Length: 179
Image (cartoon, rainbow, N blue to C red; front, side, top):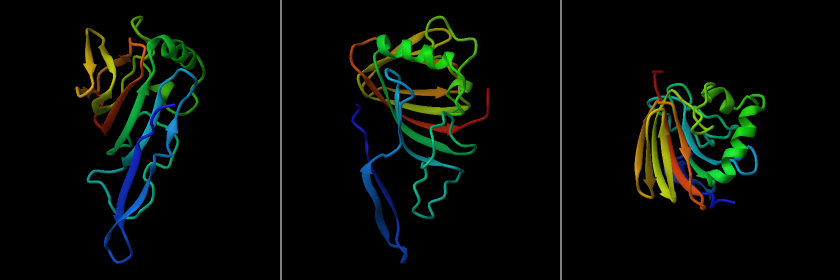
């Protein structure tokens, strides 16, 4: 099991003073099957500019790959080694779409290079927190290590962890026009 990030959320009390609304590990953790990625959702916005009114949990919903229209999502994903993940991913993608958007967002012409190729209409900021992972494009790949940042701009891509240890990546996805 991954180290689930501690999520400290601020807000305002009835008098308009700043307060801490919550301080717990994020309760929004998703894993489709053993050996697949673990997605830990932290926050999302539903508009730009974002609304800061109220103290409700903005991400209290099921998993969805894309950010909301005109919004954003902040998540941390733990990628298991490909020797575990590829088989789990192939089984997931062979099954019916469960409504989460995961299968629907996958590129139906999946690359023979990796079954995890997919594309979203978003600008994604990816920050490697620990481990290392390859970012794969239709043409080319680059190895990213802890501290590296990738700016993903609506391109078809996949993530490949070729080590024996998990890799943890933080993502901010911002809704964008389709390419």
